[in-house]
Amino acid sequence: MNFKNQSEAVINQIIIFLGQIDHKIMVQPLSLFGQSNIGQHLRHIHGFFDCLIMGNKRDCINYDKRNRDPRIETDPAYCAAIFTSMLKEIELLDLKQEIWVNAGLKTEDRCVDHSLKSSIGRELVYAVEHSIHHLAIIKMGMRAEFPHISIDEDLGIAPSTLEYRKTCVQ
Image 1 (spheres, rainbow, N blue to C red):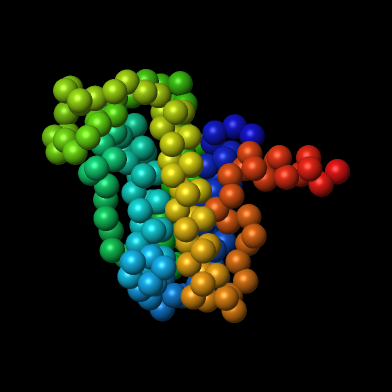
Image 2: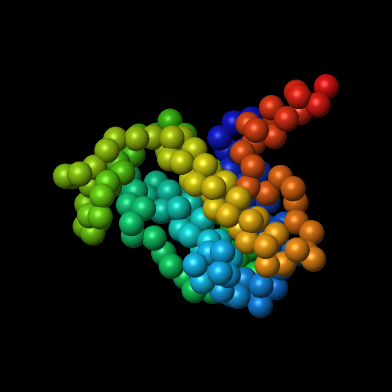
């Protein structure tokens, strides 16, 4: 499975999950999350993919300057539409393209000091892995607070782990 397919699989998991929840579930503070909510985790996932897509257009990514659109964390339909539109943007990425990534808490848009050279492909891997981590957290919150809602068992599990599990079943 290539990087774009992995990101598509993770984003599709998010879109399917969003079809199973409503506004009330998205915004309910969860004690397991230190009173943050599922919507905030989804907005955080969006922020990393968005930084990659927008950074691709500027040749510089700064993950500290994420777009924090509050509708993404409160409106499941809006959130799903935003993630759906990202699929098209990700498909257009040149994974071999070099890019600068701002490191640390630098607030400037320019990539000069405190920047690292990377590639779009490497940063896409980072966004996918980061997303999987947050989806696993979301799944724990759902199981603890909303056990009556059936969610995909594969939510928050890396594609490589899912592939490995298939070989173990034989």
